[in-house]
Length: 503
Length: 75
Image 1 (cartoon, rainbow over the protein chains, first blue to last red):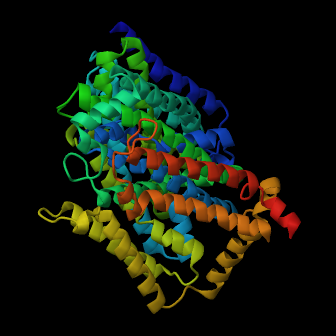
Image 2: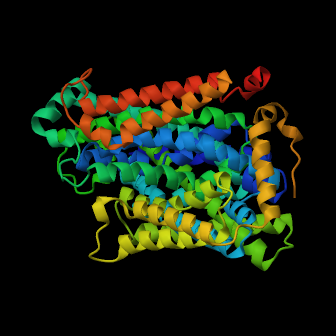
Image 3: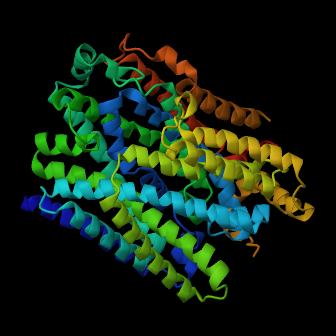
């Protein structure tokens, strides 16, 4: 038990040390605090995107889904590819425009392109409201893992509190740089932890071949769609893939990482790297299915991985693996807290309350916001529990709606603010309506957010076509910028420092 | 010109790979037998297309979308 507590202690202290070292590199500007002055190096950028993308949703929820619903979570292999591909196709353009027009938040992009204050407010509200539930699941998952890894010496409420105190301290002192640097540590732990426990678990039942033989004989419905409960068929398969990839890509934490990157080259390599990381889901397959055989009937399926680890692995190794799981949660939570506080500071405080705020004041406000959002997530984690994957889908469903006006801005000249506003309100409205109205079920078994995306897209196109176009000057400004992107992309790879920022 | 076609090819193969995993075609692969290297067919199918896509994304980075300067030289 003492060893477990020691491991947790190290796990909490190492990121703090990394965070403080990162803080020594900080410059005294709000841009540095929010997006590292657009100078994030490739290694840090890759790890922070990967670790932010991986979350408790992936580390705990994946095993739970194989354990209870069969193979539907295999769709994760495709969503990694889709996410990486879109990060290149869409993310690189956003990075370019962010650099050119000096954007810091997602709302800067939407507000500028569509030249609409109401749209800016709606986007800000969507990003804030729908990020908080996702933040909550990180805290719930991470705190639970700390509790188990310590051999229950640290109770859930204390684990959650420790979890956030550590994050608050290093984000407070180091901003996004500290987040990115600690994510390198988290990323390693997470990737190898999940793979290791997967093969370790499979060996408990005689190896992977034997595992699948036994599954076929005793639990064959776990190996094909729609799974043992009959509820996880093709509709859920496609919903999970689309909503997770789009919802994560459009989340504010990933958006800030598009702006922060120094070299565009990273975007070219990202599809391959993110796709490659999907191999770690093999670990989830093996843990989930091994759990079906050796530990049937666990009350809370999200706990299958920690329970197998503590039951069958040497305590010290199990604690390290679980700390890896908590890494998944912390690496996402730290980015979300930082991103939401950036939005609050730039999009609410500076824009509407104090446009002339000093750099120091902006950074201070952001730090207070970090504490506020952490407390909010803490209260939610203690009093509003739920299955991680379910809560995660609701959160992703909201942010995923932003893909429609984003694609419109990047690829369709006729898109306009009215189309974007009506589309977003319609999409979010349908998603919320189908999710929360009791007794309603989403048609065809698709996730409500899929219907939200459909309605959003239709409204966006129809309203944009039937209302006045954006001002000609505005259209030309972005057309020039995007055609410059097409023409000079290669040149920028080598001469990025020469990009002239247009303020 | 050849580079442009190559670029389109990489995008196309990536999208086809995603479709093989995410379109209703997946229901044709929704079975346990035949097992491949001990993996049920559905898992093997997903791993196969994941491998193809990952490989293509690596080649794409090395040959085309990672080296756009080459395209400019050819033009």
